[in-house]
Length: 82
Image (cartoon, rainbow, N blue to C red; front, side, top):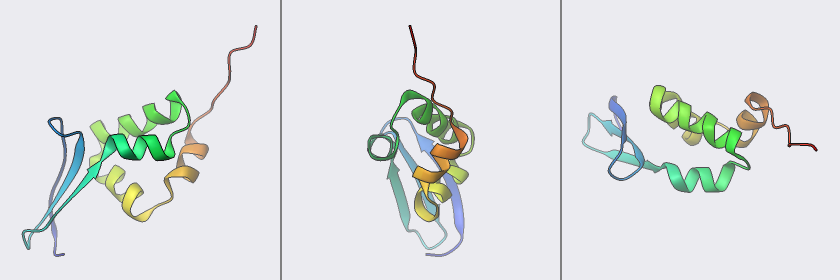
């Protein structure tokens, strides 16, 4: 792969698509990622925020980072108590 040309969320297939200067492309299935790494709605919301507002950071997190650790660090889950 060469230099990254574009990275954007494709609403038609729910994928973050990365296009490179050599013509190659990577499509990250965001629904599959959420099903694998997000345990609750707060973690899903955090991933959604990255998808819509910073798809490059999302792609970097999924391809090079540790999404489980990231989500446990940035989200606070407090169950409802009666």
